Image 1 (tube, rainbow, N blue to C red):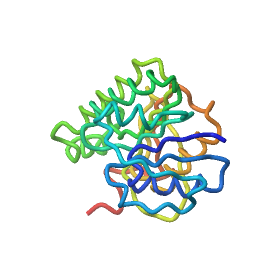
Image 2 (cartoon, one colour):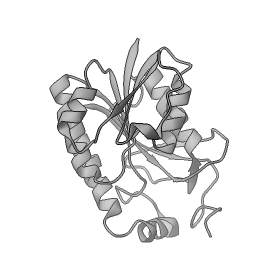
Image 3 (cartoon, rainbow, N blue to C red):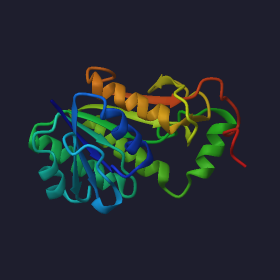
Image 4 (cartoon, rainbow, N blue to C red):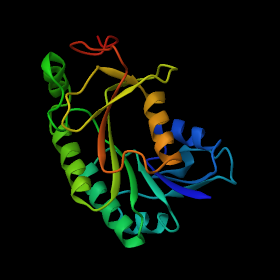
Length: 212
């Protein structure tokens, strides 16, 4: 049975992925700082691990026997990326799915690109860009995912852009990002060493329609 380590398992997208994977032939290690924040639905398929992505020791312990790492992290993402890369290397784990953000390559065009930069000012984009660069410079079989602005719509509707292409659309559902992550876990040969922009089709504009 495939073993997946979910880093930042309390995150909203991560929780949808976790639920999706219960229907698959997958065992999950749910890694988060406070295990009391989550309840396991199926103890045969899920195991809670309390740890911090800023601790190389915690990550190495959690990666024992793991096939795929799915990282849904916030905060100090640069140090987290360094530790994830080092722990994966130490444990011989190659496959990484890393959630980043749009705009890290200055790939968002026009007024929406300017608005996105203003909203994510204060070093946010720079740190996510640095973390992504560390991953791209590693020898890992990574997929970096750059979602548009997220909403909680109960829908799966998305399209992809690659690194080097202009980002499309302004918004996407968390459920859509979770669907993409679930697909990659199910078929790990998909999108190896690619950085994917993800948006809902036909949502072009100067900012997400729901933003006020």
